[in-house]
Length: 577
Image 1 (cartoon, rainbow, N blue to C red):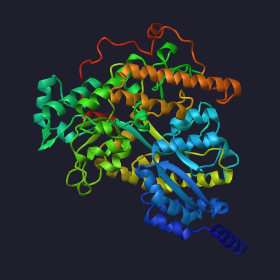
Image 2: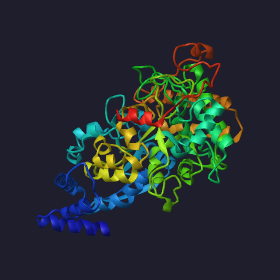
Image 3: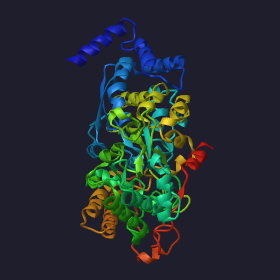
């Protein structure tokens, strides 16, 4: 009934020669009351909103459904920006929030069934290899130049997006539009690290300075120092490490999100290792056909560096993290730092900066009475197998994705919403709420220069050239949903004690190869992956591959070299220059 009334209202307005839903008064109200600061001046914001009003006119009265994971940025979109978009354009958006695993499952289900479950998804760019191969997502480059030209904002400015390279397929086409972006960095309590008594105690025990760890040896020493030798600060029991181990899909992403490459399992290359990436999957340069994950096929998923990475994750979680951390998931472990009893975290996502800068009144014990952070973020330390030129961490680029099983009119209405929530009019304000930068113009805005001292290094990192060493899953992964689900069960078996790290990674690599063999058969029979499906190498003795240059790498005689640290001030100086 409501739909018919909307259509009738629209018809009357059109007959009267007036825009049905265009409401510049609403746009001006949102610009003045909510969308400040902005990289655009008010007149430029009004002009951009007028474009949205005009472009949305054919879709006014439509109700669409979109899906994203639950982080502060998307909460703001779901609760605030949907209201603004509807008042300005007349398009109602139901922006649903679910866990990341459920989002991936929904994307996979729609691709498999070709039923339109959602009109748009904020879907990690980790699926770029999947979307480019399966061709089940709208190719944005072609759509923007073709059928969607009329609904593509002339002020979109793709060159301003810092993660567009992550959402570009091997064919050079853009398949996804970044909506939010965050990296896994090192997090530490700078106020504790600066204490002269703790510095002297650490130097006496370990023989070098307490500082930001450059390698995993130093991270391990610092974890031991705070958990074992310090034990208590100001009457509170403290720990030297935080992580999570709950047997759930996010445990798999904890590892595929660059953990193996941080240890040094992959090869040199940007944005991902060539030919072996951080998943341990081999794909030769110039090819689009993955050739294996097992060492016996030239992969590195069960090689010495990968096994070392999983062993250290398990050891540190058991020995140095707070009780109960092994039962935490992604969403529980990271905000737990606000309790103020952890000295450092090697794998901390900047998406949680918004929670970590809340005041003491909101239960955050890691800021002072004036709201200044007692902590800082710094580059991720690397393991003993790592070499210069490898990626040193993960960068999530949650990106708007539209599956071609969605009718074009509904997809275009969702495309308008996606451009609205990432527009220059809106993005600076949204970034102040969620602190997940996607635009160069935003991160370099004066308002973030002013706010930087209260954000613990986030602004400096995103303004620095260092950020390119953090990247999402790349194009070596041929079908992310099918392969990602293999990981968490195997890693969970390590945490439970059912398997050793070597046994778990052997089984993981084998199951990945079995799954990729099925993809190969499907591609060869029906061109399912556009000819870019896996083409597995024949198995050879592991020693053959371990003896070749690069990954997979042979086991080191010494996996714990001397710890190395650096002063935080030197890191900031490099970032600023």
